Image (cartoon, rainbow, N blue to C red; front, side, top):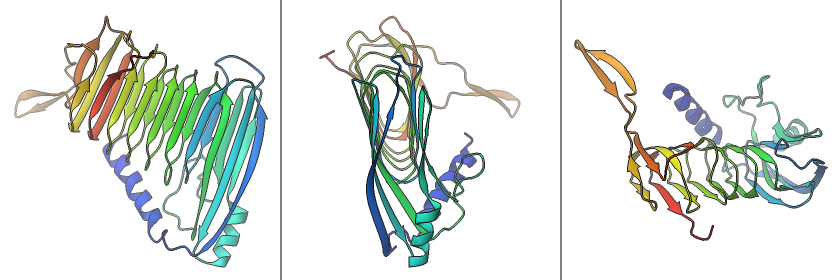
Length: 285
């Protein structure tokens, strides 16, 4: 993502929040959804595309997917609240190997993105508690007013937030976790076997691995420290981008530090602007 694109997203989120704390017309309800994923392999997938609200996922035995939905609405007027009830929904899609939950409404563009520029006069929040079979892959996304928490999952993951934390524990797969304003904490029960990427702008990154970790790291922070509970070796850093300035070639490495733990292995990238990056050892594994 280009820097100017990133700035536009943040500005749009801020504009959406103007006046949102003073929305006097409210409604809420709680309900449950249930599905089954009959297989027992890591090709199964649970996808959640939320906008406002938290996502809390717990893995366990069996084939059932159980979702507890807490829906809350806030609006400027009674008419706006009535429109929210008609226009916004949590839409489930279910196939043999995939369950998808998507918050849909007039803020969605035809390609599924969110149009932050449109004022609707209401906010609809979905807080989701989801129990899934442990052997699934996860694709989770939310934007505002909620953290993402995952526990005890064997499959790969792709997790995205904007204004909230990401906390994954009991993880046995590989993947990406990206937020803007919030901490990123990942605790692996089994060390990753393929590349991973962990990114935030304002927040610390904590990565916890088992004692047999073997991986290559690319770490970057602007205002923070890089800390490791494992012995490591510094590695050569790629030259990076090259510019020609005043007749000379200038190489930029963007502050990246490369290290190797053990004999090396999958590439793990961690980047934050304002925060520490800590690589810790879980000695109970």
